Length: 434
Image: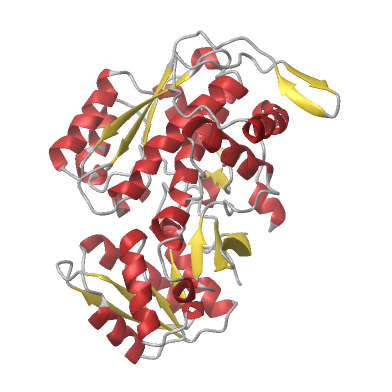
């Protein structure tokens, strides 16, 4: 699994990364960080990664990137829903990644990355407006998490030939030829949860607990299909979306006495739900949620520690607490320096990795040739491309039912003693035999 987890790390940016990590962490250790920096052409930063070593450490010396900016639109529901405060991390991390690329890695062959943020507000008109603005500004790609993106944004950017790297908010994004989410999200995390508990933990039964929404019913069917294939009995408990108190749903799920409960909850809602499980006497070691819940500030720090100790999560990224991983260390250092943030969030990791994917693709395409069309072509035909802090983009890995899910690799992590610990490195739930 280690080789698969690492993927094929591209030499074009790996060498620069290894040197930049030491310099960035050294800088962060001696200062409070530059929290007011702005991504894009105006960002101060390095040029074409001329690196020098002095003494026992390393530093980067390069010219400021001055070429034509590479515009990336981060379209996210930064307002409009209760979970918006957590989603704002998509904007913050995307800008931090752009600053990191511009200052530490020299941009993309001298071209700076410019991140433009747009609040989709969980509103159809606002989502469509963000997509239209991306087209008007000649964006190379769109990223972020907008819940109404599948119906109100994707088609607009697709018509203009702009690749959508937005986190999947609906099954359409796992099918569209213009959708390129770098993580499998619901498409692979739920199958991974079922595969892991059935074949590795010996679970014979599971209960799905969620609010009643079309997208979550679709996700349940995805999970149940995997459960049926591995001989696990799976049932569902759906609660009204208008019912904020999870107590009755939790009580019903517990009464079924399953071996494990799958619950796609995160943030403040997860805090309340896990407390309800605690009150019912249900152990957190028999709960599993998705990577969206892996967030220190939005969830772990706000929950009663006894209610989450030992709980499990599927995630498409290396644990943000694994500072032995050079990419995680670089990410955490960049978030501290450029965003004055700890970066202990899977959402932030994904947004940062989106920008790093554009950077890595641009290094292969060539900075002078990088545009929406060339990036679209690259992602359409990609094979064996390492995702920063993640798995591997490979068209050959996409399951038949989800042709746009070209990174199905998922790991299983556990919350233990205040940290997120990996218990199962990345695996492909569509091919794994456990």
